[in-house]
Length: 441
Image (cartoon, rainbow, N blue to C red):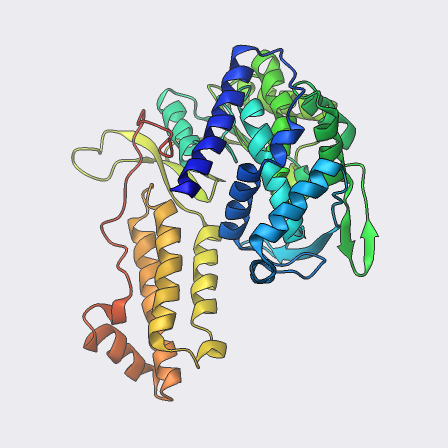
């Protein structure tokens, strides 16, 4: 009950800040820093960090280590350090992770757990203020909005006749945002000197890579709790400029960009406008991913937010006279699913009970299918389901040092439910134009 009451107070704080910002678009908030180290805000921040798990930072302290140290003790120390101005951010640990389906590596910065708590508390306080200003074209990393909301706009606009698509993304966005301009964007709404100092410290903390700390005058490194919010704050300048200078309907999911247009000329103008506006912001388009696609029967499609989108003609007697936009998991999404299933059923895990492997498979498949079920994905779900059954059969055979045929017989023939592996059939929700959005609200 006490925890619920504290959460309610945090939510009420956020609602109050949102309403105040919404009521006065020109207001600059000057009394925010003390709210960052409020005990209920820090406790909520810790709960979010713990739920997200994550690895240890440069201090090598994991979530489990913090719990052993004592949560109350840690939060008391953070509150005191913040209040007295003693808190210092440690450099983040730099790692590189593969991008799904690509050889390219993505840099990831992992702050210390204690620093993630402070970032989460800061995000809790500032996000409602900037959320009040955000425009309809922005979907990524925003409360109450999701990728499926952005995907619904794609369906709606194609139905309205916008079938020329300009697609791109922002080159190296999280690493390229200039700190000085980002702080200028933040200062449009925040004048609290202590909070601004805190945010500058987060930006200047740097990363530890190969034993050396490097600091930059640009970037909100991926991996930081507050980075997505800061990215949106800065790219809000793009959204505002687009309202005056852009053509077509902009759909922005963080640094992924899509513009739905009526004509090819409009799509070309849209790319020119994006290039110009981003150039003024010190950013640029990733040219390798920049192109214009015409959605038409028999034409090519495009990938966006994990789905491949393509314009087709209906294949049933009732729909044969109609053409419409469909979507299904992209090649990269399918390859990511196969790779993850292969990891779960790898030889290195043969010592684990089969039930544990099935649970891990089901956990992944539920999450993957939960996202891609909002599409025309039935045959792709069948492929992944069959792949999972095959991999589980190979695992069972290897675990018992038998032939693969025996493993297949055990999983697919002897067990009616494939040893408890979930069935993805019947979970598909085909996209339709003008469906309600904001499922998360």
